[in-house]
Image 1 (tube, rainbow, N blue to C red):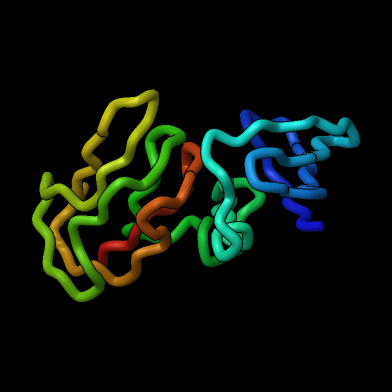
Image 2: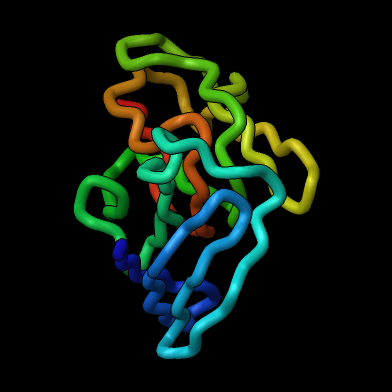
Length: 137
């Protein structure tokens, strides 16, 4: 059984994935059990791949900080593309990340000139508003 903790809009959720069989899953959310029908059958190797939502309030130091130069997510969504890599020089206004939110692609631009010091998210990550995406120094 896998256990995850999430915080969505300030509301904490404790999620236990109890069982996954082909296209059905048994999931416990805050003590209430739900039977979930999956759109596609789960492949054996894919059962262990779960990307947690990265929350500004519950994230580890690696994902949330008050770092100078950190570009934060302006809204919750999924990282579709990372247009830069560590060490790249960027100019203010340059596209650095594409974030999908509400079925729309949102381009996140550099807010200053500098060098990409650290990328704190990966393609496919779900993020909440206020989470550090990358750091420009």
